[in-house]
Image (cartoon, rainbow over all chains, first blue to last red; front, side, top):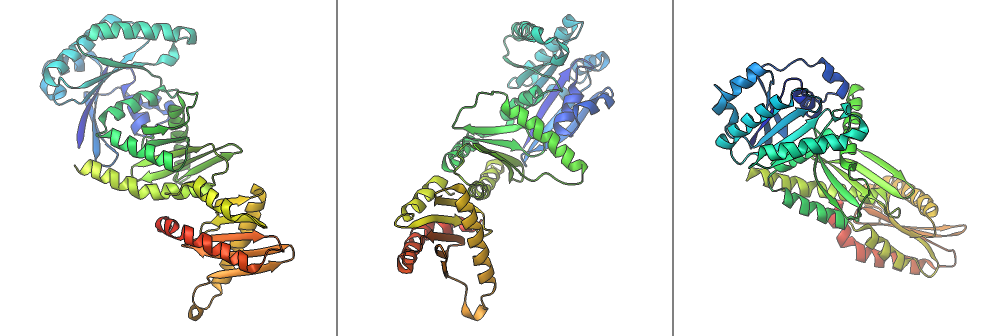
Length: 302
Length: 123
């Protein structure tokens, strides 16, 4: 099952950087080495086994942009499932950005009118902390009025913190077929093994696919933080020739387990009942494994 | 899947009349669930019991068949160890508890847990 994802935005706005961090195991610092993207770079990212993200990273220099809207219009904008448009928050020439953005929307409207549109206001780390909310809200307001009649989903992002994972998790979530089924099975799993919370991650990217929560947690950013932390931990594991398999964190009134679930997913189980033994939870995870493998198989073979 | 709290409740029901601890361990000897005075007790009993069980069953000759039951009289109490499906069940009792009642409790628990545990044992 192939899904075409367009990644567009002005030159230097950070498209290739974020792609490299999420899908090619770069750390934020390494993205300095990346050069400008020439024309379109296609990459196929296998996600959850049979779902293939066909990522079109479109170089943002003006010459290329003009080209996309003129001679390559059909080729680029046909059959798009998701358009991700990246804005550099520090951009000096907002008018021009908007002009390209709107041309892009026009092309999308005529060629693939059901595409979902995500707008990422990127490089938020460069804005002073007390200004961030204000500037972001202004930008979103403007974007929404300019995008009418299309609906856009805005995110603020930065490669230096977990916001990047939040945005991309929502993007891939919108691409997974039948995700409600997966969630309902996860709910069941959560209920039976008496966990506070169970979160499902994709194996390569560690993006959150689905979660089930029985006990509310105050921190709404916890998933992205964990994605970020575990991804970095995984990378440091691979630097010592080891591969990350599983982890257990426990103290007197909390236990967290991260373990692989299927060939394409990791699961995180959070337990707050200290009387429940680790071995029992680990056994439940291994029992769930078979069930979820079957589920995943059925889901994608359709 | 196992409901850990339910299993603890079942084990709790056997932990009466002089029985100090009832412990369920997986084949590797890790605690699955228990009913005991304290965490610490359960861990120690469990470690010792699984150790004894593994050593004995290793030395069982194939013509005799697999080990099915162990009764131990110790200085300060009595211990019964048996196997339920693939899991190890261990009861620790005061020394005034008779071996017969200890064995009966073991068998009652086994009857109750055998079917559900055998369903998860294959994993």
